Image 1 (cartoon, rainbow, N blue to C red):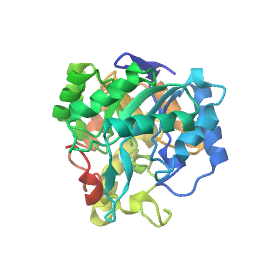
Image 2 (cartoon, helix red, strand yellow):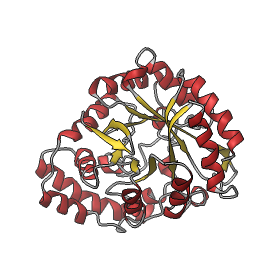
Image 3 (tube, rainbow, N blue to C red):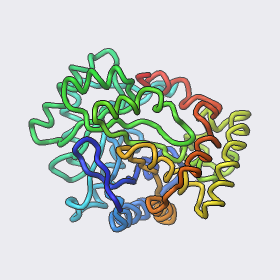
Image 4 (cartoon, rainbow, N blue to C red):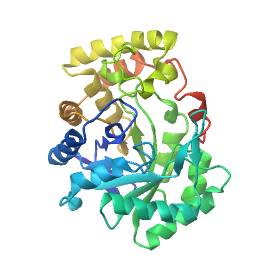
Length: 328
């Protein structure tokens, strides 16, 4: 697979989001997840994304990845995160961005992953009671100590990103970006371009919406996150499905799956945008990786862009409690 640059860090142009192997999207098999990660490496999808909180805070996902990459450390680029300690009663996050906690969290992640250095270390969510300069200053100490190679931020606004970058070079911003969710195009993507920061697009398939496989909630597990996502509920879902139907028609005309054209479209947005579709299934992994071989014409890009225009999707990105933690 071709590579792209996040700042100075080369990564596969499509990565693998590993969260769903441990939480949020129904039951999973550790054995199948390990096989999926190893097959991803074989296919050239070598940019692996995790967090210390994936597994509902027990580090399960990092431990799983550590098992999968044993003996293959030099073949992968590892990205993990810190900053979310747990959940409140209203399903918001408990945050800790302090330098002291960053040091502790980093050591724990290194141990679970079974590695000596983390390639890309993100602040998962910003605790706005702590100045971003202090947070990034603490993270930069991990770089100087040789524990971390590059620093990233997740779900912050353009002003925060600028202030952080002035404190220590930021390599990547991780934010939701897809045909389904375009908010980063207003200020975040232009700021990343200006500062030379890569944009890692999580949920590039709209939490599975752009696969076309979720048309109602009946088949989802009782604890599936999408049962609480406003975009999947009631009239919002009905409106969004009408948009998806046009994307599906275009994909059929191109001769690819809806998921593949959604990823291919995202790759055209900027040469430093890197989508990290999540899957725990080998069949979807192969389908997603093949999207890197699709070359869209200008007409096809325009058709896709206008089929699901910015701002047309109904519903907030998160339930209210989680939305409050986004540094918007």
